[in-house]
Length: 79
Image 1 (cartoon, helix red, strand yellow):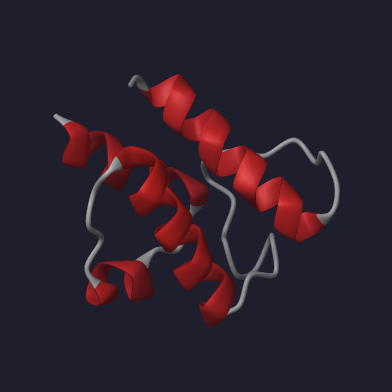
Image 2 (cartoon, helix red, strand yellow):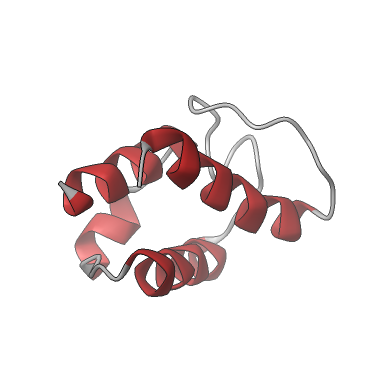
């Protein structure tokens, strides 16, 4: 699984929350730019855990602030 595939999956999940096909960038803030609340972020993490067969600790999920941080964490977990 490469970075582009991870970004594509994360983007598709986020597009569902946004209800649009907005062009997402890695530096976009989950809270400020995309309007996710803590439950949305937890749900995003849960979907990523299932898709990529990884575990994301709660303290890590709480500290995700950008789309890129989510992607980087998943990629690092799969190495």
